[in-house]
Image (tube, rainbow, N blue to C red; front, side, top):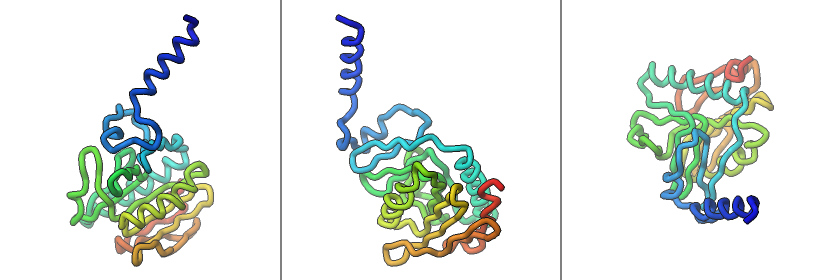
Length: 198
C-alpha cells in the first residue's frame, strides 16, 4: 500500500476517536487532553479561537492585575483568567479572557470549570470581534452576567455594558485620555491608555 493511502487510513482512524461536528458533549469536551489553548464548546461544536496577539495579552494582564488588586484590597471577590472554562449553561462553555466573582458567588469557582461570573472582560481583536460583540454578547446576557466589558486595542476603546431586564445596556464607551468605570464594582476605574499599554 502506498504511504499516502496508509496516512489517510491513520487519519480516518484518529478522526473516528472524536464525535462528529455538532455532536460534542460536555463529557467529550472535558475528556480532551490539555493543550494549553483556549477551547470552547458551543452548539455541540468545538471552537478553537486564534492565538492572542501581544497587544491582546498586554491589555489582559493590565486589566487582570488592576481588577485583582482592587478586589483584594476591598475583599470583594475573586478574579480568574483564561484558559479556564466557564459553563454558561449545559452545553455552552466559554473561556473569557478575564472574569470576576463577587465574594457571595465564589462557590461558583471550580477546579476545572466555573459557573456564571458577575463580570466578564473580553479583549477583542479583528479575528474575534464578531464573536465577542454578537455571540458572546447575547450569551453572557442570557446567562445573567451582570456586567460585560469589551476592550478593543485596535479601536482603542473600552466599552462597559450592564445587564438590565435580561439585555445589555451601554454604560459607557471610553477612549485614551478617559477613564472607564464599572457599574458593578463601585470605585473600579481604569485609564484607557494604561490598559492598552500606552
